Image (tube, rainbow, N blue to C red; front, side):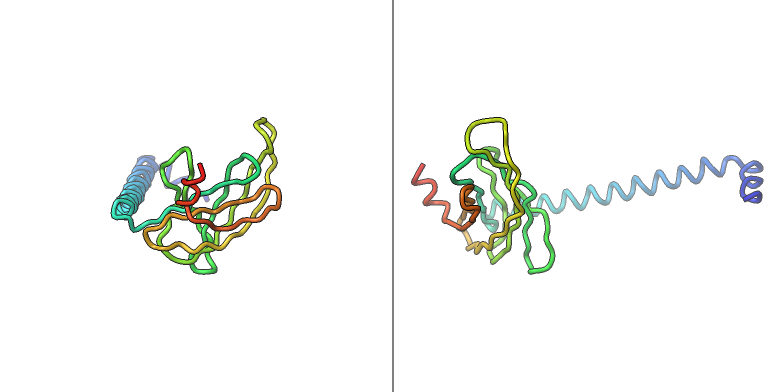
Length: 157
């Protein structure tokens, strides 16, 4: 420890040099991460415009509320956070066609009030078909969830 302190006392500019190098290394890392994010979001945007991604809408029956902590399992082992579409009114998960397991939790309330109860996590299996939007319906009374076609939901409203 004494050798390090004496070295710093002899050459105090070393501290500035080390911090400068660390700063530029962190800026390079930040630039690389930003480039990766831009590249992945550009790929998602092109997939969405080419209609490769299907939407899985989320709906609560017999109550009001929100879905949160939504995770998707693609391979049966690894759970990843769901990527939501940019829609504000009706939230939807963007996924490619396939069979997935979805884990979600609910903040629900029976009427229009400030009080809500947190429920979950719940699990559902969904089968996403190409070029077809689907919907996960959660029943607040029975705590059951199932999959429906999204076109039927539009016709009922």
